[in-house]
Image (cartoon, rainbow, N blue to C red):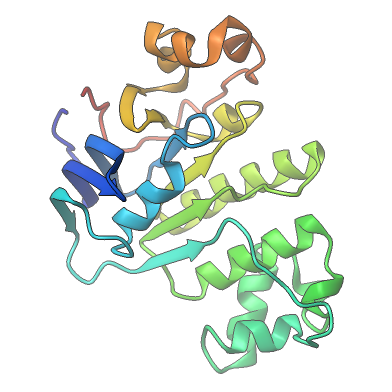
Length: 248
């Protein structure tokens, strides 16, 4: 794993996790730097969400070490939100429970994600795309240095997925934060990331999207069709970030 020339926000060093005598993560080394979008891909059961929980300190590793930038502010978007349709929780109230008390704080976050029109709607009445935007707004209320997004386009149609990935990239650019994102969808995700980590309990390969999709370890895990079905990776040549590739 090569050195990061920019500001390191989060680093996992030789992290192992065993639960109920089953190895979930094995010797994971991972570094996230300010200004980059890093996406973790892998099959179901690969340990992607568990890795996020370990990185966030919600699960202690069995061995290894986790380093965080001092006073690191993290905004977290969960994989799903279980809603009781009989519980009348509005978007306004939902955000008030998690963020600043001033209404303009809520509206600024909702406007940033393109969801200000749902501020007085019930959460249970939102579409999949609207709910994901509200969850993203909630994560932004912390003014995060690091956004941690677990399946951020879950329950959203393909057109909405493209828009959400573009939104995430704009947020990174505007806020100069880092994004650590998990996805099980191979389609489209590569168009909105700087670096990919292919996880199957251990890190199989990592690097720029076009490098990972040609890696024999990736092809062994997803097969040639998995690589062919990925959207074409496009990257703004003017954008610069400071975190170089890892090699594990």
